[in-house]
Length: 274
Length: 297
Image (cartoon, rainbow over all chains, first blue to last red; front, side):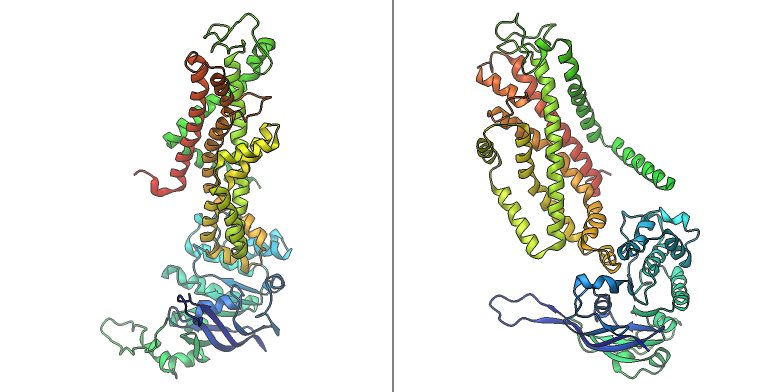
């Protein structure tokens, strides 16, 4: 069963018009992409910087309004919903942001931060906040509730962000490079936590990353994105072992081999990212 | 809940530690406390002998014409035997009340409008900011004179209202600029993903983050309000049922004692400058705390 089904999703950003110029020009940030995620699976969205990964993520949680296309979540199209009607669906879909130093309000305690989604849905309950903190490994919860973000480490903050996303039991989570700002030593901890949570919460996840090693470790399927288009999709192992598209090959050739003397032949990418 | 209280207490201690380090704030607060004592002392001084010392209706029947400082009248009297010291004390009350209330009101209005314009953008931004521009470009003192002329009877409440309505645009411009940059920060986006409504985002997520700046402008506004009130009173648009420093200066000028009675002329002028200066010092000190780039190494 498909949890998420995206059809012909497009997002154009208008460029500033030149003086006296009549035709409006656009940046095609996301250009007619379609993909599906089955229930309980993790899809990795990989690609270089500026290829439209984060824009796609923001479109799915409707931080941005798509120019055209459909986003079906559990059978319901949310692409055209107005801001007022989005509230109900926000219970089902949450996002984990890239930078835990930026995504937590510095003036709110951990308790207030995690309580926000609950209050918004009218479900406030201290027990749930306790549980969420415990689930993400911040124990004992009482020790963290009334702290501020600046008193926590990067890994702890990202765990708080994950707790905030999971506290209202969403069915679909978008994770936008959740470990790219973290220290390598704690990266694995957060990744394993997400894998464990995905099992226990039966989550469907869109995992945005530029790190192919992380994508291979985390994801069931991989979609490779280039210049706003999806160029290749398939089973994670399959895509990485046996890439079909030339861009995927080029991307894989950029991953260093863990041997200082070995040198891989780099494939140069043609086609500019605007 | 005890934890929260402890946190709050330790935060206050931290702020206090910062305040104690700043010479500007220490000096400003000292001057302010001095005027605070004066304001509190006013009713006590009147109580000694209301018929002589009341700043509005009292007068010393034994005095003819303005006399200089004496034991009974520490600052002397005006031309009809009213005690100048009592007037000065009452003036500090008025200056404090008016200055504080104007700055609090205009900061609240300015912050609200700045937050709304900055967060909602588009048509709201245009409408509110053009309104602010219009008020900013109007010359303040002539405008106040015209408006207080329209109202006819002057009272401190009308002055308060007019001052608040003309002071908010400065604050709202600054708050709007702050909001514009805060709005794009990921923690606001994550609040929106959490399903938090617009009103709550403004109140709970944006407002606390612009508070330090708003507080700095609050102190700057007090200075402006005190000076403008003094100016208005000096021009004869003050509250005639009360006494303020500006009004003392006006009477001194109207009665022709400017060069004859320095004991009448100098104290209110000095008080206006000093109180305005004290708030300015606090503002500068706060700005140093808010804006780390100004900090000395």
